[in-house]
Length: 390
Image 1 (tube, rainbow, N blue to C red):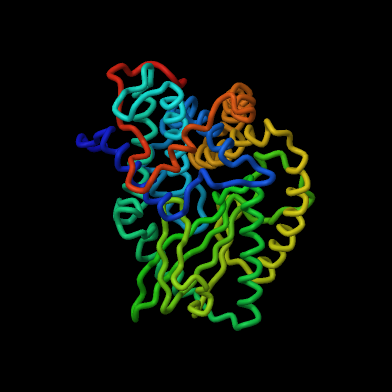
Image 2: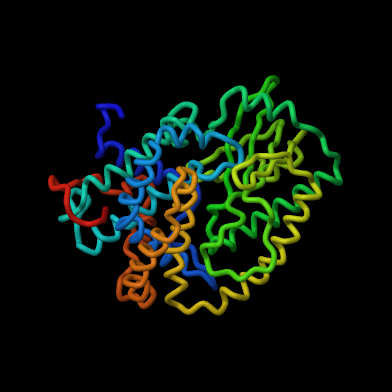
């Protein structure tokens, strides 16, 4: 780790990237769902990360260092990915800011009792992963909104496998990817953590290569009872595009120009990952996955309609656990039950007050601040003991 690492500056760096994300994606304060309390779940998950993430990351990085993990994350249809570490940051700092705001602190006032060592563990992990995972070591707001993670040899392999499937097959691919994308949205409680784009990788003649991935398709953290699920953990559509541009943010969201970009897809290729193994995916297999996903969507909406108001907030603990657990597994650790028990203990304490309004969602209001305003405080106490656990 570089001696020049500055915790306050890295917090400000992330705050700028988060500001860029909200300026591009819209304000979370406006997200209203008839089934899912999306603002409440964010704050609940934020409390879970602020209290427990650092201690769990210590266990993971003791097993395998962040930079080593990041090097192996640089692959198609791989989870964890960039969204994973950015979710750690937004969760941890939303939890931190919620506590700060509840304490009535101004942006330049340190949070009494904040465990600075914990905050540094989280920020250093993000910093080190970005430094290795991104080919240029920069976040999208610093590099023109690119997420280039693959080395040249991997890109050449993808290009060599591209083909023109024809109009009928291409329509089947497009329709199936759309159905599975909606499935990931519902599977994760109306969160877009299952969709990840990377690229654009420039190709000769002005074309670009973009990879769209649908990941964590077999996640079972939320209490769904499903007869059918897609058979693979992740699917990926590798596309060669002409006369199309894309900007990608730190959460892997793609912003296409033109918005309807399908006419610009001149060749493509499908891949899937199951139990860590990447393989070629047939279009018939993708269609079958979409059929299973469509059945599951109906079941999940029906089941979510029966959730009580407290769990519509408290499921944030399960959702945020589902982001962390794949990293632990990737590092060779089984922390599933430890993560679940820690997060559920926090949710049992905070979900009720968040659902009733006893604890106001102050960080949601903060995230809705006007463009240009700092979202996160870089103020730190001199003491390194306090909130959080080991």
